[in-house]
Structures are given as structure tokens and as C-alpha cells.
Length: 261
Image (tube, rainbow, N blue to C red):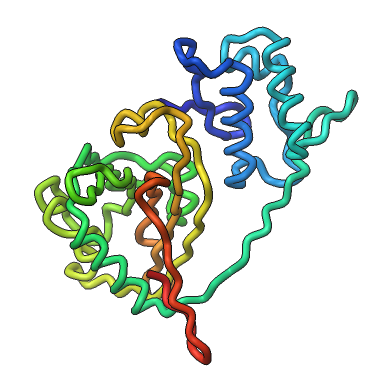
């Protein structure tokens, strides 16, 4: 599903008028996801009824109901003069992991789950992606979308962005054969760390169609930033996995850092 931008830079997901899900609830879900993922942070202003109506082509009554749902879920606070602001604060518990073990686990996962490359492009980075990669806006990046499979069934949709100035040449054929992490290693890029966040997500129409599930089905989203030995981001990945086919296990050992598997 194509995502536009509103005036604050927050992604806007067009409502699906043929969807059985009511329009107000689609807007509620999109705003809720923006809040839970931090795109609308604590204290941020939420678009007004008028702005939501213009963005989605719906009435102010529909937009008002979406905002009311957010307030009922204690994600926002609505005040007549100051507008609607986010009051939700995410509680993220950091878990340290041995980077060598984590990278080895990711490489093994990449080798053991067959992949189909949906598309590969070399293009200017959107502003939010450039920020994550700590590059200038419009920096040229590779954007790759792949579907990972388990057996003959789709497991998840993986989208990655990698700066094109790292000396790595990606092709659909090479991505089908090897994970991006191996491409980085073969180019001499030393992986020294990273950050990973796991959250719940509803499947959008495009993702659902690619993975053979229903729109709004539950998914597990993993967002991962990989850092080189200079502490600079060299890869950003968003992986949306089917909740009915994917799980994460932690091997917790006394006296050592837990390894993520």
C-alpha cells in the first residue's frame, strides 16, 4: 500500500473503501500503529479532524470517531483548545546480546529460509530512511523487498535499505543466493553492533496479498539497524512475519549475555 506524508512527515496510509473494515477504524489503526512505533511520539500533536478528513477523503464525523477511539484506548488526550496530543509512552526493555552470535544466527536464518526477491531498486532515500541510516536526504540507497519461505509457504516480507556507497553490488540473483549481511562481509564491511525492536503489527493489504493472509491479520514486525565498526548504520531492515509461522526464542544463560536466536 502506498504511503504518503502529512505535514509533520508522518506516513499516511490511504483508506481502503472496498474493505469490510469501517473507515474510521482503518484511520484509528493507522494512527495507532504510528503511535506504537514512535512515529507519533509522546507529546506529539495528532492531525485534527479537518486534516484527517482532507488526508483520507472522509467526513469530519468519521475522523472524529477515529480520534475518539484513540482516546478510549488511552493513546491520546483530546482538549478543546490545545487539540489532540499523544499520551502513550512505550516501555522498551533493552536486552543485550553477543553481536557475533546474533549475526551468525541471522546469517544461518538467511541461508536456511529460501527467498524470492520481489523487487530491487537503486533510488534516493526517503527522509525517514536517510535519518535512520544517518545519511543526507536523497542519498542513493539500495531498496530490496524479499519474501522468505518456510517449506513452500511464505513466512515474511523483508524490506531493506542499504547505502549504495559501501562497495556492495546487489542484484536479484545475488540476493536470491545470499543474505545481505554476507554481501556486506564480502565487501569488507565489519559488523560491530546493531539495534533491534520487535513489535506487533496488522498486515496491510499489499503485505497480506504477498503473504497469502487476510488484511489486518496479526504480524510480528522486526526493525533492525546494523552498525559497522565505526558505529555508523550500514543497513536498515523491516521484516513483517506471519504471526502463525514465526517465533523468537532467547537462550538465556547465567553469567553470560543472552544470545538472540
